[in-house]
Length: 408
Image: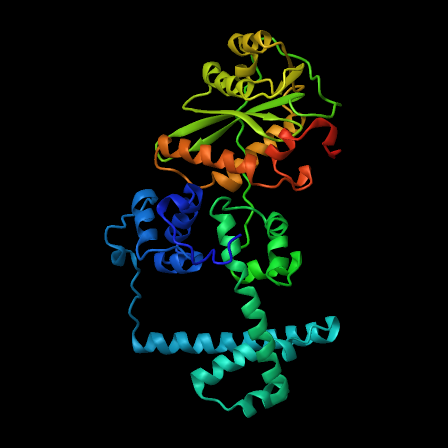
């Protein structure tokens, strides 16, 4: 990566749509102001985020000042009562925190009082003009120890300041990429820049910067397996993919825009985890679902025998879908009843796309189609996969068979 990545001049095209939607969501939830968002992510331009808010947001951003909440007025008596309550609460809080620090220092050897007091002491001294001698006496530390801790913090801060631009650069394309994958992608960059940080320390740093990704869980059933059409046996129940394009796995998931609910059909290679075909539609008709299969077949790089595995949904059992498989000489395989674990890879890919790339609502279907195209390209070519020994799906898919690793 370029050493001056945070100074590089960017245009609107340099920011992925998923990144824009993530920033818009944070601002509209009140987690950041649009100016704070620009500063936090190093976004260039005085009103770039405001432009995104007006285009992709759900609030009226024509007059940003009107969205600021005004504080309610208090009478003097109410203010006195509130301050008295806050004082009592603060005394109790200080007592509890001091007890926690004492327990942590004595039982776990954390040395919090000695190692981490310099920053709050400096802030209090600046705000209230309290002498350093008094602060050191209150917390039982020496002046020399105080100044040494300041030097250590300054050195650590200078080192950590190099990390954030690198993380922001990656999250412009993968807004919800996890810390383990971030560390894998940036480990060589850290070493090249002389940044000493391990995976656990990176977790701590992201937590301190409020940049950890919170997991999202949801579940909606989109499969109707109670129908009269022919269902096929599970041919890959105890099998393991040994090379690309041995098994294709398919599934359908729903995605909402502000216009309506849409349905995304995916066909994925079971060995490389590469998304081979996809199609976004406004319904789950077999004619629309088969378009994802058509794209996957077109993107094949081999011509050997293949099995297509799916759930027992009406679309996959339909004549139009089964005819397409027969036409290409592909065997059909299906789960035993509605058991999502028998189609785990397809379910997992759905989850990655929805929870890492497509978690923010688009205004229109056209905008959603653009986001899906960008997201699948990033997923296939840039996102490392734990099950692929931190390689990308496209790398594994295009690697020569004799050099393919043995994957668990």
